[in-house]
Length: 359
Image (cartoon, rainbow, N blue to C red; front, side):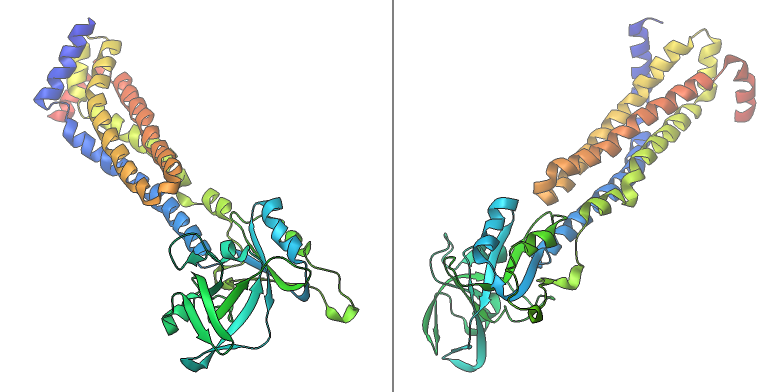
């Protein structure tokens, strides 16, 4: 058959409804859409878990060795390893706010990196000025935003850090952090906030611990700011082991099955065309053109859905689009393969058997 005749035949079947474009397109959207939704929700749930892990401070690791933390070495970790780091030292005594003396506040000195480690937000909404950092429970309790009147005098509040009761270490919510330049005085702890978490984290933290003066002092202790979510978050392994990783293969199978049965449903008509002298090659091109219409429309719908779903994590937009397109586009060659196999399998000599099946 000539090319224009093939196009006319395919167009006629589409316009008259013989090709069942809408029905097949809807079925394809449902089948591949289930796989697509499974893949996207699996990855989005993983991204949400990673965000929650960071938001709750589980990615902040601490080495504790009272009076034996090198503040300069701790601060230098941020430049050397691309992490946020700060040394922290507990200050003696407790602060008491004048308006509520029965609620004591812990006080700490910290190197400048503490603002990045704790995610401090400036109280004036701009760049963090000089002054103290307080935990969010302090503002919730006392309502102060710029200055806190205490038994040790007025304290200017430069910023606030979130510290809800969600499994974090106690003692830092109702607290005042006093940033200071790195000096010669040793600190008690070194805090490191990292993402992704390096494999050599404890070795990194150990490098800032000064030697013990006596054997009785013991070794350093390694803890998390919030240990309630597990000691680490291995996102790479969780992604590699997700059940939805097989959805691309399933898309090929679903596409092939739908394409095959979409053609086989018209086996009597196609066998009659073979009997009338239409070649297998021409018949295949007609079927590919017809079924290519619903395949193209369904693919456009699925891609649009992926674009909308991916915007829920704009920072991972490219990755979500890539994973979604993988599932969608693998269904296309599967459908084409199913259509091809079905057309080739329909023989002219089976016309009488197909006619008997119909009757």
